Figure 1 (spheres, rainbow, N blue to C red):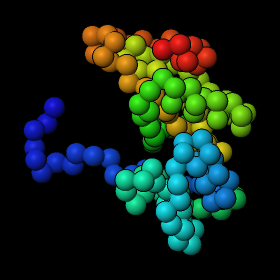
Figure 2 (figure 1 turned 45 degrees about the horizontal axis):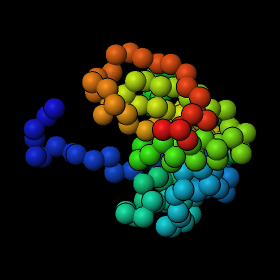
Figure 3 (figure 1 turned 30 degrees about the horizontal axis):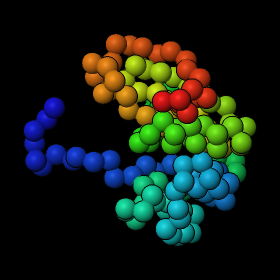
Figure 4 (figure 1 turned 135 degrees about the vertical axis):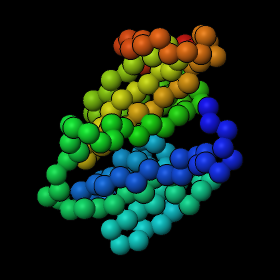
Length: 150
């Protein structure tokens, strides 16, 4: 790990382009529990409460192309603290009929899904403490219903 006190040390926020603010704001507040801190024209700023915004949404219009399949951002990932929190996100996604891919990486349990505009998202629980802390290339499906038992 780099030991440079001048280097950035924290992801400040994620800025996503969406077609329409209203459904995007509804999705991010309803699924991820973000709150709106500010609207500014075509922009909405959402936060979990510690900062002005953790996610910025920018409306680019109904006719905008979706994310591509080539080079570019694969997904934005958000960590939860407990298995129950991950189960709650999964339930919120199911209530909205969002297609979810649950993957156990051995070091984390992750839910992969797209927002209404096709932006890739991940919500995950870090499980490094339960193993050796190193990823061994594991990508196995898991049943999110089992999270309640952890």
